[in-house]
Length: 476
Ligand code: ADP
Ligand code: ZN
Ligand code: MG
Image 1 (tube, rainbow, N blue to C red):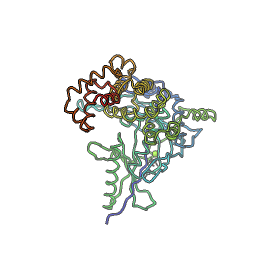
Image 2: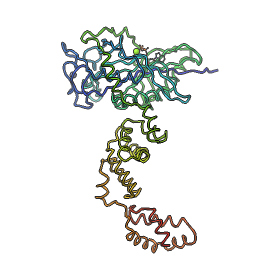
Image 3: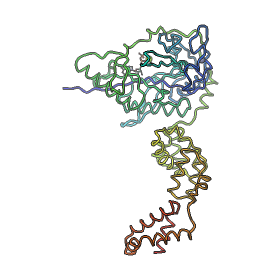
Image 4: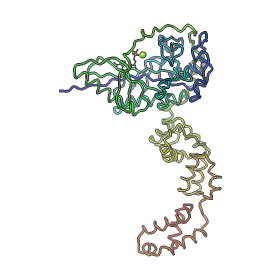
């Protein structure tokens, strides 16, 4: 008889902070420069070079801690984690082990069974490593230190998650909080947010945690879900065969849908951590902490509540609009200009989302100006352009941020409200489709729709359908 097993998951999430310069030197953090062009003696580990802490890193880390209900450790410090790897030129990483900047927080996630708190054990600051590029053709590896010294925070959760759905809800929640704070763009695919999944299984009802493994290299929600399902089953199979789960780090290969052991799990003592001698401890004064607190922006949950009361839009709309900081900002700014929040919401939720999907983009990539969307909404409200034309204009706004007023002017897209001109076209349509005219006169309403359609076609979508409808009825 097979037993019931529970999955237990804790996450270690690395997030690259959006500072302009690195954590301990003035080099640029910009992504994608030519290899080894954003480097200096500090971030390439030259002897005698000394680190100086970037103040902004402390502020971002504390802001994330405050938003996740952590206690801020006003006297924290850095430690050295010693290990050799070619992408790590100092042979150590400056991180925080003994006194991390934030501790004991939580975030609330929505699950099928209602909302649930996932504990945050700690958040610490550290530096990123460089990147190795393996060239299989030439059988050699290159190293690029541009990323060496880019600031990271590591958010360590408690083992509070029980399924892939909860893990994804947790990551999405963190992403939204951090994006709203402007602390990072949190892109899994580009590596500015990276999640390591610690997973164990235990017999349902057992209070004792099982032995866990840690999985690395997960760069999409789909990969995370597949890796979790696969690792859960692998561990259950071992236990069912009476074999032990080995505590180790495994690498997930999403193409093969399979993970393999990378190295046996190392302990903190293996790294010979010691207090970083080149940096003074960080003291966050009450006043500084107060300043950071006063700069905290409105976060997603508050915004969601406010949208429903202030703009009177449905919960469904509010959720989609606030699912990205960029989209929420666009919504608010456009609504402030044209004063028609529901119309703004419709354009963003329907057409903008459709085009984003078509282009394989994220809401964060929306780049048109609120004034242009507002102008488009005003044109449709005044009846100056038809619905069909409005969609065409929106695409031009979406893609090139055109000014709808001059665009409509230049392309001659203004709706024809000239009754005489329309009447001539209607006469032609009527003459061309005698059968439909007879059908309509014999009581077939559908025939009228056909004639309206023909007229719209003849005016290239520029006429006002309500006007056509009314005039047709009169003329027939
Ligand atoms: P270490 O110091 O060895 O890295 P930690 O105690 O810091 O281990 O935990 C690392 C991560 O693993 C945390 O996110 C934690 O929630 C998770 N974790 C710890 N024990 C388990 C377990 N038995 N099952 C699943 N996850 C676990
Ligand atoms: Zn540098
Ligand atoms: Mg740890």
